[in-house]
Image (tube, rainbow, N blue to C red):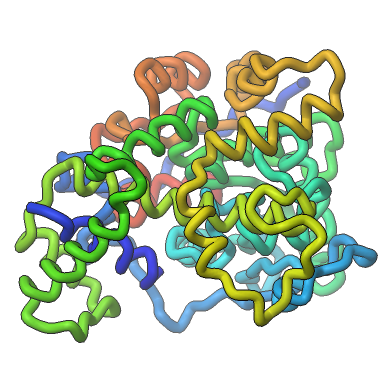
Length: 432
C-alpha cells in the first residue's frame, strides 16, 4: 500500500443454468452516497477521504497461509520465496458463509483494497478468503497451470483449483454454511469466469457474486491504460526517468522535506491539494502503476517458461542475478506487447484454427454475456466515470446486468471502494 501511494504521489508531482430465485437487493440501511471527488483521475489516485471511510480496525488482520498447488514444479533459485501460493483468511469463530475475494491487476492477498474488503465482510459476519490475482508473480510461479496468465478460461480454472484446495483445508476445522464470490478490477473479470465455471462444476454453487469495477473487455482496458501512461510523457516511455526525477524534486520542494511520511492518511490528499497536478500527469501516474504490475508479470512468466523474451533462455535465475538491465526492458514492455509476442503465440500454437481475433473476443465478458444476462445471482457494481472503461463499455455493462447493477455517478476506478455507502452496499449484498 505504501509503495502504491508513493508511486502515485511521485507521478502527481511531475508537473503542475437452472437458477434459484434472485437474491433481493440489499435491504440493510445504506448511508447516503456523498463521495466528494468529481474528477475521475483524482478519485482513482486519492481514494476516499479518511472521514468518509467505512470503519477500519488496525488490529483486525487476516492470517496468511501457504498452499502447495503443484508439488513437482521446480522453482528457480531467484524465486525461492515464492515456493507456495500465498493467500489470507479471516475466519469467524462459529459457522458462517464463506466469501472468496479475488485481487485486481498485479495485486496479492495483502493489497489495500483486499484488506478493506476483508474487514468489511468479516464485520458483517462471514468467513473471508483473499486470493492473489493470477497476474501476481506468486500466482504465476506457484498457482498457474501454464505460467502464462490472461486467458479467462485458464485463469478461472487455476483459481477454481486453488479455491477447492483452500475449502478442503478450511472444512477440517470450520463449518461453512454457503459460498459467495467477489473481486475488484481484473479480479472482478476473473470472478465472472470462475462463477461461470462453477455453473458446470458445482463445487460451490455460489449464492451471490459481485463484480466490482470490472473491465468489460480486458484488451480494450489494457489499451486505455497504455494510453494513460503516455499522456504525461511527451517523449514516450524513454521520458519516464525524467518524469520521476522532476516528480521527486517538486515533491521535496513543496513539502519542505525529503523525509516523507506515507503512513499519514492525510498525506496524499494534502500533497495533491498543494501540487494541483493536471489530468495528464495523474493519468501517467495511474498508467505507471499498471505498467509496474505488467513488468512483474512479463518478467516472471518469461523466467518460469524459459521463453527468452527478456531473460535469456537457459540461463539460471539466481538470487544474485543483477536485475537492473532486465527491469529496464520489462518497464518498457506493455501488456499489448505481452499479448502479441508471448500470449498469442502460445495459444495459437496450442489451438490450431484459433485466430488472434478469437483471442481478442475471449478477453471480453461478452463471451459469457447470455449467461450473465440470465443469472440472477451475479451483480455489478461500478462507477459511471471509471477510467479503465473504453467508450461504449459502460452502456454494454448496463445492458448485460440491467437492474442487477449499482452504478455510482463518480469515483473513478476503485476510488470510492472504502466509502461507507459503497462498503455498506457490498457487505449487505454479500453478507445479508
